[in-house]
Amino acid sequence: MFTRYNTMISLYTIVSLFVCFYHPTSALSCYDCVSTFPGNNVCLPACSQTNQSDSTCLLVRNIPLEDNFIGSVRAGHISSEPIISDAAEKYFIYGEEAVYQNPSVAVNWDWEYGPITYGCDTPGCNDPQNVNRLPNALNARIPNETLSRLLTGDLDSSCYVCNICLDEDATMTDISDCGFTACPQHSCNFVAVRSSTMGASQCDGGWHFTSGCILSKEPAQVDMNIMYYIGSKTTILYQMEATCLSDNCNNFTTFKQLKDAITVDPDLTCLPDPGSTSTPSSSTTTSGGPTSSTTTRSSTSASSGTTTTNGGTSSTTRATSTMTATTTSSGEQMFMNMKMFTLILLSFYIIKF
Image 1: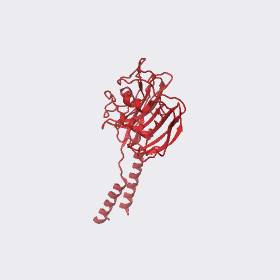
Image 2 (image 1 turned 60 degrees about the horizontal axis):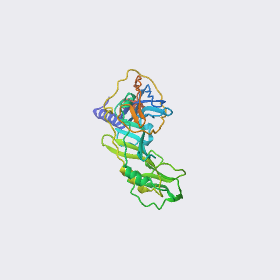
Image 3 (image 1 turned 30 degrees about the vertical axis):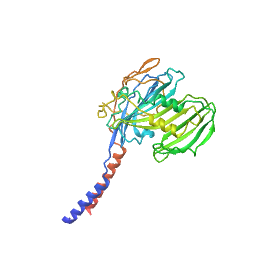
Image 4 (image 1 turned 135 degrees about the horizontal axis):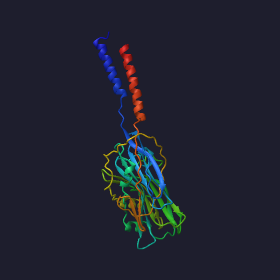
């Protein structure tokens, strides 16, 4: 028979084992599915929910205006998007936008937008039924005067050739480690990618900057991938690619001035409440796939499912589908159950002996 001392020792051991083995996990349930369709004939996918720990739900929309391009709607977890998997906040809009010099003097600079991604962190908040409530774009802008000053001119001689790391604020001005290449009557370009622990470019949290000559005469333009954190109203540039038309214009200073001049003004009026969830009715299993990424030249408008262009309007069709959910546990929870079972066996062993 156990004495009181032995009983206390046994209880202490059981509690210690419980504290050692028990680590609660937070699994987020997100819709996980994909559909593709021609042009802007939106077709929503039948969808299931899957659980992942420490995740963020994503809803991605890519709707081109031209029928010969493939559009897509995709829902899933942030782990499927390595570029933004290190997002500092859970509630955001991520978009691809660009500006190019139009040959028409009256138009001068045209803005275009591509896929838009919505991030949220409440169960089922990425319901594909809400795809038409996402903003059309982040409405990024750089002043025309800045674009003309930095990107236009006459390319008579050369471009910089760089492959170097810059600090986070791109304050470096010493470009002596870069070379030159002859590029008369062509175009210079540069690509700056924000360093990420998940990506190939490791620059200690700064920028991986590469530049060179394009062996053709391309219009001056800037392509950007931008993150907008809704809660803090913070804008983060993830990547910039620029083409410019003057001698050695593809330098660090050009990048920094363009980066610092970016502003965004997304229309979030129709954005779903991140605290709302959908109520599924049954369980199904679906499989996902990759999405296409096509940038279309158009101007932005309100998030009503209609995109306005210089040639008129193009309405998106709101197709319907049955949204379903699964109730299976995550792999982390299964591992937790195994640890708890081991704890129980150890407890019986201690009590017995």
